[in-house]
Length: 413
Ligand code: CTP
Image 1: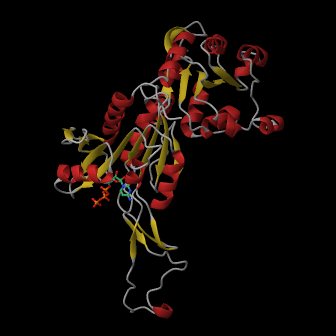
Image 2: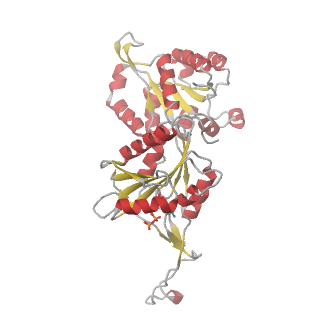
Image 3: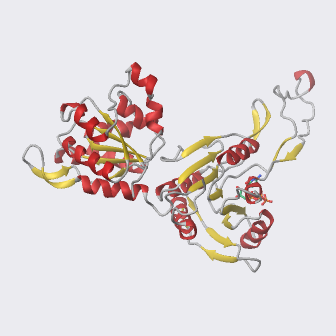
């Protein structure tokens, strides 16, 4: 189950650190590679020697170790892993994670990683229930950090309460769950947000897309275990945790980034790509009138069509994703237009959403969707989904994708 998976294990300073030695043993027995980081506090409870001996790996501990940085830098440590596990996770390290503080190797790696994170909190029950820790845990959950435990029982000080780190077997089960979702072993590509098409150095053509739906879909697919590349146009949304996000500006950049991400098992095009771009973006700011004087009639903007990313992905010959999904943003005759779009673009499913004024879809947090799927040469089938939050629509879509592609067999390589 854990064969060949790479786990970056951060051991922070708590009495439960001794249980992390048992966790390393279990991970290795399951076939995983374990790269350990021992914080300064962690090293007060377990020795680097015992961690290294069990992990059969060098123990990393000091951000500014020059030999460490030349052998394997903190960015590589953060990226070359399938999952980051913090066990035990003290109230202190959780607080730093929740606030993006990076003041040692462990917290720098946690800030620099784009891989999923699982924490196993361990602390005194009063610390666990403290308002600040509650706020930090809520923040981390919203950021997509997964948690196992803590349990109820005898604590270090002899008190009974909540705060005991989950047992190694529970942490192993949580790791397997985190890495073994129904999309595990599959690769997904998601486009999101608008594109910006430059007119001159200060102006561009854009649209009102927020990127909320596309980003939510990328996050939902990652939570089910897919390796996700999100290609995002300019958006105020933050990069979803556990997702490789590529930031682009124009439709042509977006297409290039999507082709770079191939092969994938599923492509979901949620971006509101600008259909046209100025035929030639000017190198200098266009002035109001010739010579800079105002009052002259505005220059006509010549537009040319942008590449259609969805159609391009659906038309790939050798590396077509097994499932190509598009969106149709319509203001009227939603289903009829979406059916036509499904056929015209050659995709497998279209999620049709109503973006008419008053629907609140663009920029809002909710969406009303019809799923239209191509069924052989015959009539496309239509499924109406209830009005729901964009997060719920994303979760439902990810589940539907898992229903069709689920299981690692035949994954894109
Ligand atoms: N799309 C794309 N590349 C484009 C235009 C659209 O990948 N250049 C994708 C969108 O991400 C979406 C689907 O095509 O998945 C439909 O986009 P939409 O804007 O609704 O339709 P258009 O093809 O632009 O047609 P129209 O504007 O006429 O409705």
